[in-house]
Length: 228
Image (cartoon, rainbow, N blue to C red):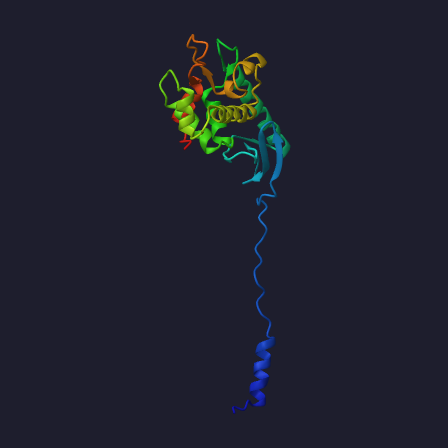
């Protein structure tokens, strides 16, 4: 068994209690952003805070939608000014879009632009069959699709189920874009479908005609990310 001398034990004790160098503590960065503030404006969620020394406010789709892409951004001398600037930018954006909508000659309904449709289709929660129907209609010929072909594209067993799903898809997009339906048009075709498509008249009472997508929605789907 090894024995330690008194001198050795004393030296060891001094080593244990010798003052150690204080650890360096990182200084707090004055530019470190505080917690992000959340708010809402219309159909968008607003996130604001200090970023790299600037007050920034950004608009995103609300959490109920699929995607989380940045919609718009504004900066200001204070957080309140940044938020106010963002609100103004969003309001101006919505007004510009509404003013530029084409009015359908048959229904008088203002048709959203391809830009609006593209955003809405990418944000709302469409089911697989709904996406399949919109894709089939978008890539159909100019005269559209019959009810049978549309039903088959989505895998539905009945025309009623297919029309109901198409109507629901239209209502989702209408709610996202804050579109209002014309009651007379709604009574003529399943509610919600008027926001997406129209019936091609055939002149025969028993034939309701093919489903044809609005040109703007067709362009949005053809030029946007794949829906399937």
